[in-house]
Length: 451
Image (cartoon, rainbow, N blue to C red; front, side, top):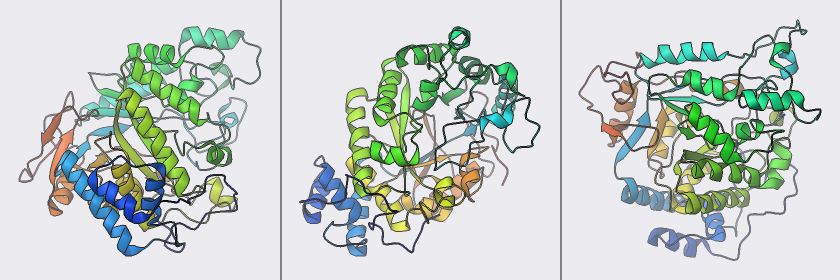
């Protein structure tokens, strides 16, 4: 939820960062470049995101000028269509030892050990359970299964990788044999193969998970993603990016891979032929300079790979996270910041066509507003969503096609069902009272979720 009490470009927390939102550029010059379609520099981006670095806080008149420029760019690039996908989230496990301070999805993995009799709120699914969940969801018409999970110590890439982990005497690999846990998660390849039912699209294995899936084996990321692709992986979510500036990662997720490793994994996924997405999680301890540095790394990655199908700004939900519990943050991004993040993403990422508005993060009303700030995609149906909910999000877990059509047509835009990669698109008739998905392998147009 947005924090309306703090001026938007006043630094958060007590952190002394090298990157500061200061430039020698002017807001007017940056805005003119944005309007002309000239590729923006980092300083241009900072000026637009702060509405000028010469004064504190967001200037409301300047903000509207940035939003207008982004909305015009959106119309030029993708027109009036608003896309969405019929999808299911199947997160395999909450067991994780990484210790990210922004996350309340995880549960300490030692709670899952068979010798631990204490109750805990976490879960782990076997490959067989994952298959049952996907099979049932396929009958509702889903196109995509999204799966992002904790880094369970028993996870290995495949049988060969498990042999390597079992034979290793290294103590830094975060590995324990699956027999030690109350539920065996199988291997990454077994989970992907289990979920890959009936030509459903599998969107899974973040760079962080790929790192976990090659620990101790010294395989290149290309090898990891090739094996996963053979098991049924179709595309890679560019989450675990958070902020791709290491001085911020050192504060909020010191146990995670660094920004260079994240980029290396994403390039490897693209090299083996997998589409990817990209994200930013903002509104915690970072400042506007960090956000633009992040966008700059994403734009450069896309210049090299041309594999990123969409960019997803994720507004930090702070309520139940360690960052909030430790007093390191007292809120998330303001509404002004949310709108400018969408707008500047559209203007800065001149090589990525689709910018997503997350109704899970923003809610319906503000999520729709983002569609006039530069966004053109309105996420997916998400038949289960655990990560944001655990952090304190309150905007629901499922969305019907009828709701999508009603909301999108109400703002004068065109509702379009899409595939994960945007290559398949279907305009949805707003006069069809029983509207449902048709692109999924078993979709027949019946309602995905009843209202």
